[in-house]
Each structure stands twice: as C-alpha cells, then as structure tokens.
Amino acid sequence: MIVLTLSLEETAFNDLQKKSKQLNVSSEKLIQKIVADYLYLEKVNQIRQEMKGVAEEAGFQSEEDIFTDIS
Image 1 (spheres, rainbow, N blue to C red):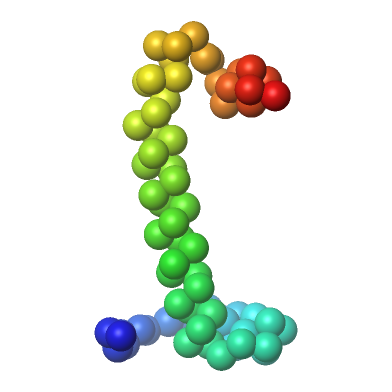
Image 2: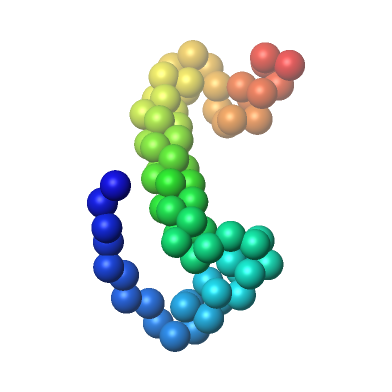
C-alpha cells in the first residue's frame, strides 16, 4: 500500500471527521472509499462518452432511448 500525505482545508477536514463518525469508519478508510468511488465514476463517464457516438450511429438520441429500447 502507498502512503499519501494530504492537506485539507479546515472545513473539509471537519466535515470528513464528522462523516467518518456518522459512518463509524476511520477517516483513512473513508478517504480511500471516496477516492476509489471517484475514480470508478470517472471511468464510467469516460466509457459513456466513448459510447455516445456509437449509440448515436445506432439511432439513439439519449440514454433514455436506450433504456426504453432494452426494457
């Protein structure tokens, strides 16, 4: 595992502490989860952008059209 030093604004640090207590997890674990979730969502958005042209070529104008068609 890589160790990372992180600087946060005081308000962000306080919010992190508050949320970690609410979730009953350590701040470290919460930050790991936040980073992993962010990177996953970025990957999904990249795939969505790459597939947008393919979907338009197939006649779909929106994601709703795709969901309607496969439902």
